[in-house]
Image 1 (spheres, rainbow, N blue to C red):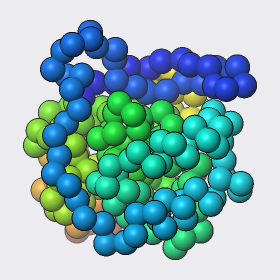
Image 2: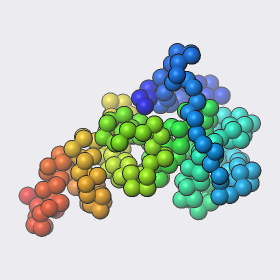
Image 3: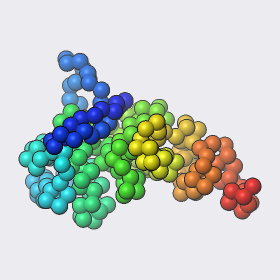
Amino acid sequence: MTLVREQRQDKNGNVVTRWVKPAQAAGTVANLPPVSLPVELPFDRVDYIVELLNHWGEHGIEDFDEQNITNKFWELDNLTLLAIDVDYALDSGSGERMPLIYDWVGYFAEEHEEYLRELVTYAGAFTDHTSAMFIEKSISLLKRSGDLPPMEDYSQASPELQQTIRNILSVTEAVFASDHDERNGAGVQPELPTALCSLIMQRPDDTDRIKEIVTSRKTTDADLIQFILDTDAPAVSGGIL
């Protein structure tokens, strides 16, 4: 899926930038909703949606009013509620991620619900202060890069592939997030080289070490990073040589 940058007005007339699917002609197959089997929730659907909506008073955003968001939450697929539950659980119920969830439900629930699920599923790969724009752009670029097995909805990937995606996104943040924020996203494409993605896939246990190397050496050269990982010389691995 390729997303495009689009400027929209929120309910207060302020211009905000979103990453959205490009508009498609009416009547195309792509406009048809995906066919999915019913999913049984391990919790009460009504109680859970009410719980999520109860955070509006504390975490509501300006782009949408409460009734608008409420209607969209009640229409969410059970798969999407499951994805939200996994991410929401990372906060131990504190609701710290709710502004992002409200925002994404507001923009993507009706027409791009699989992308909403992906955003929610992989938001936990990023640190808490990471901007929504960076998260959206990073996931979009990774999805269309061809470095992952082809899937329409990566929120439904196997646990192993999900962890691989989180590892790649975590390194992506380490490489690009600071520069992206300083430049407000202008000219910064948070996408790792294919060779580095492959190295992360091959060596998942070294993800934290790879993050240290790319930030200290300011490099995305997979051959250099692998050499540093494989060497036992402290001067080399520490970046002295």
